[in-house]
Image (tube, rainbow, N blue to C red):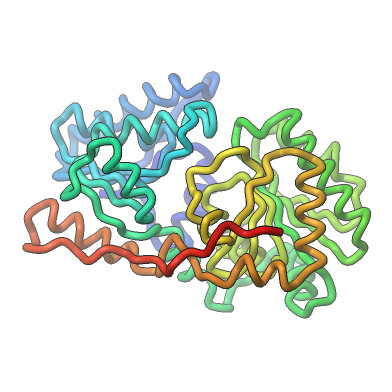
Length: 362
């Protein structure tokens, strides 16, 4: 059974529909404050009702959201095996990302099968005492997903974005994708980033920016306040996944606080400046395809300018492939769950990424 917990109902349906994957059951929570405790208890109540009706043999949870924690707790309390996709990611800072770092550490305690995206994530689990036989390096399904939607047939519905992607593909402009959604980025940190983006654009007439703004009204207001009068900045709502993938593929550089973007961009050889002080995805940094710049205005401007102006520097950052997956994570996941449930004799072979380089120097 597939369960969709709907934080932004129209976007959840759109994202799942891209892959022909719709929830068989849905939870539409009535939010008063949207706080983590309210979400957690609401999800727990809804999951309990679903479990009463369906009696699952296992529960699969992905990532580090409050929904993920609720699913793991609901299953654990019913003595149902928990399978954790994207297990073992650690920033080693409970405040960043918040509350995701705590969520995923708690899910680890409840999980029976830990599907780590990388060898480093698996090593984190072993260091915390998780038995070796309960861990599989599966790769990340986000790599499977982005390979699925980038077959060249994507229709971009926003005419301005479609024209921009055509020009970027031809090389007549340089495209920079900017995404900001984490709570710790909101407010003054986001303002610093946006002002850095405006400065970069003012210094380079060929630079264009696409910024899919978070649905939060305060975030959208701040983005428009800082960039609305900046020529060449295209502010959109959240993009459909195939259109986001097409934008990423056409980009020269990405600025992002998103974990998913850090995992997706290496597939297209696009370097990422991570707008965070710490990341639980150090594999990208160690492979040379990402750099940590935080939200420091001057560091963002200087690092981005060097990469935008130096194709050789960009090539050095993107020559080592994607350390997060090879497009077969879903197949490994299916086989690992079958083994957990006693349906097959042997677990699948793990994902083994290409050898990493030293962190990039730009």
